[in-house]
Length: 75
Image (cartoon, rainbow, N blue to C red):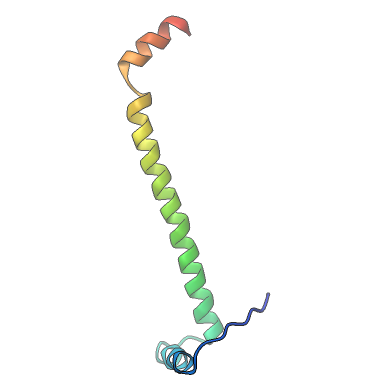
């Protein structure tokens, strides 16, 4: 596993320690790792959502009888 270092102001570091302890996380590293993975997953899901919306929009353009009849003459 790769190690990274972050620096926090003293008050935020204390708040992080208290939060990790209160929520029974095994460590600060585990908490931060979970936050990062949640954000990355959310970003992936957002991209998939946008792709699905684009596909639906394009489906309206691509799937129409008029074009099917026109292209049917040539294909």
